[in-house]
Length: 409
Length: 136
Image (cartoon, rainbow over all chains, first blue to last red):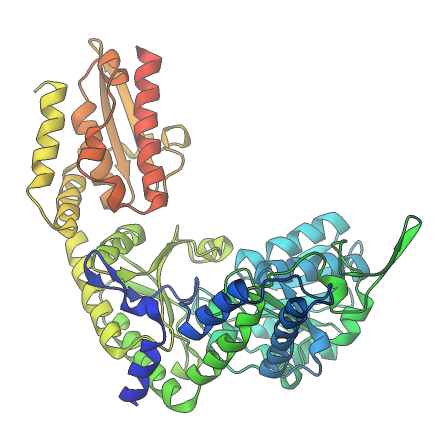
């Protein structure tokens, strides 16, 4: 197992980096993951050898570039268990995917007085686009709240769902709370009322092997950069019936079937939603990236990651004055994303001191201001682990955190 | 201590420490020792915009000299603002407005703060400069 982990770490060049002369301990994975050599190689190869625009020209290089771009679509579809690669739309990231649904689904299906339910724990990307479309259409944004421990108050969902509810939007794992949300149950409850569900998989795609057909969600979105792929890549999965029913929101090249001055007809999905030149170097990196994700989520590595999670969870709960947000009822529902405050020590001070010890963590509102308001804090400190983080790093983090706290209090 | 001497004293204090962690420890001490700030003065108009943590700066003009008081909910930020007002409090507006604030670079503060915090530091300096200019 140890041998495995060393091999895996060797594949992430940035893990060998030093900051301030100290070994980098990278615990900001929920913001963006590090990239393995296989992704860097693929990315570089696309730039060095296969730089041509996709889907257009007949020349050899263009066809090579197109093959790799479309191979990524197949790989994504297979990875998340989509019924067809035609259900995979490439975007520039999770945010773009969510905005695409808000705009296109909103145009087709949201009217005055309709309702959209969004979980209170969502990051801004899965909240602001819904606020925008609700404001524009005169629709109502409803909140599925979280309780004090950070769990969604799922028992409130049946009464929130009405005949006017057009969509439920929820992350499978909150980027702050790190708890597995009961998305399967949410999908079931919503579908009983005939309401589709969008699952934001920005964090979930990293830690779980998702199966969108088994989950039966209507939409699933994620960014490439959080799951080891090149930044500027993103995925929208949508059931075919929705993609076929939604109008495009960006017009331009490659999304059309026929263009005349009098008007245009649009290409079939997914191309209808991919106007313009896409991230031709980045998208193919999703192939090695998702291979890495599958490897890192395999049983033996997951067991090690669980041990790290359990250690951090126990260590943090033994620190006086530390308040953890997202307290699991059962540790299996907790992902290694730990957001907390320490009484008497500001999150920004802690982050600065940890940085000087070589540890990269996040401090602030984590792009989830309503959740900060919910818990009555101005910000939190977040340490988010990836499967390539070791027990040794976790121990160093806990010791360093204790040292930083003692410097401040 | 005149302004030049005050700035040199800060540079000397900082040069005592090789490790940035120790320099932070020094800033934390400065922050902890900063004169208490009137809670009722923690108002929106005294808040310095552009800082990640909240920083309040208050001032008064006495015998032609500016005196500053400040507070922050983050202790290192409080140490940084303490360092600034320690140097510039009790100076004439003209003296402050004419200064280049270069000693801040000399102690290497910018290189050792994250970009967002460097932005915050810049906001603190600009606020002090603006107050000085308005009173010059």
